[in-house]
Image 1 (spheres, rainbow, N blue to C red):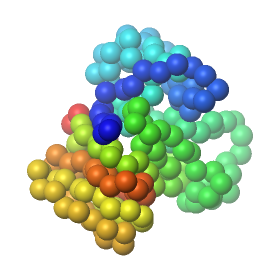
Image 2 (cartoon, one colour):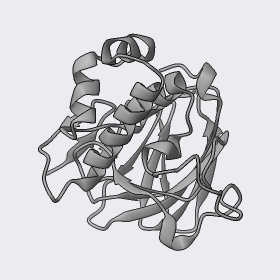
Image 3 (cartoon, rainbow, N blue to C red):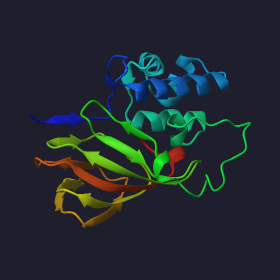
Image 4 (spheres, helix red, strand yellow):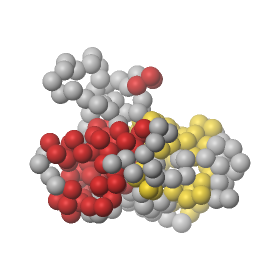
Length: 210
């Protein structure tokens, strides 16, 4: 049975099995309040419904990367701020803006199909972001964030189908790719084995089109 990941957030239930959703929601609420924004005001500026923001803050929804990008542009924060607790009053960890230690990678799932991402980028607001993505068997992404910049990647394990502007290409482990991120694109795992890939994005979120 095929599952689908879309830019539509997947509702869920708060439980011990879903700590990531709760943590993201807690951080979102704190940063929103620190900037004096109501849920309605943030939703209007980010083009995300107030109801969805409320669900995310309460840990009842697993937000997509597209939604987090919309929110973070309005809040003026890096994407990693949703996945890390930073004490602005504490001294910075040496090389924290240069190095991401292997045991300090934020890990999270997007949507409701088990597709997961492991951030590799160091802390901070960077135009270049990279991560490891795991795509479960018979899973397809769509409605991904589209905007000025480039995306690239390297298939680490498995067999991936990359579609850019309706042109599908099958990639094996060791194959790499790069394309203009303004073009419609998606990835799919049509096999019975999981796919792992290095995913690289160079974008300008403040000018991105959603």
